[in-house]
Length: 122
Image 1 (cartoon, helix red, strand yellow):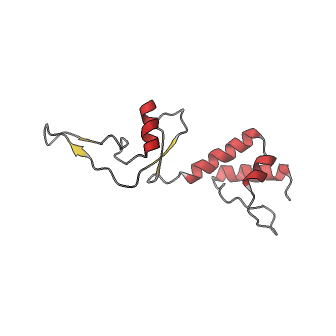
Image 2: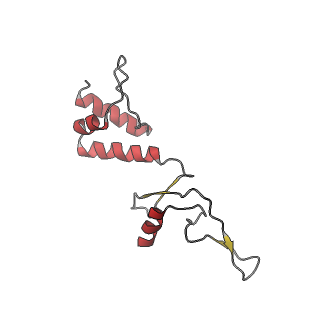
Image 3: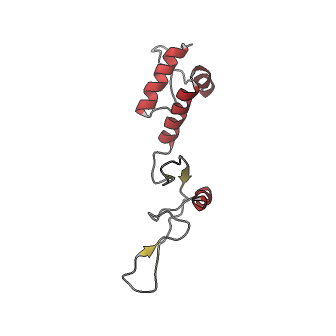
């Protein structure tokens, strides 16, 4: 068993490296996966929040699958829906810009139902 102070330092280093998923015991002879409940029991609420934020960032680091809310103060993460969105062209003229359909983000990539509900709140 690792002491709380050492675990805190280990988690802090993992957060800085954004390598929080599958956190292993730092003891050279151990290498056991550290349970989330053990981490939660040993860390302060502030450090636990840092750990969870870093874990989330690590999980959603694939921009093809996930997108962050464009509002700077929001931490909401949206999962993109699998089928690609086709853009539609305005009938006004051939030079008109393409307009993404309502189920797409401004970059034309699809959003999930949850993301659409979140987007509509802002």
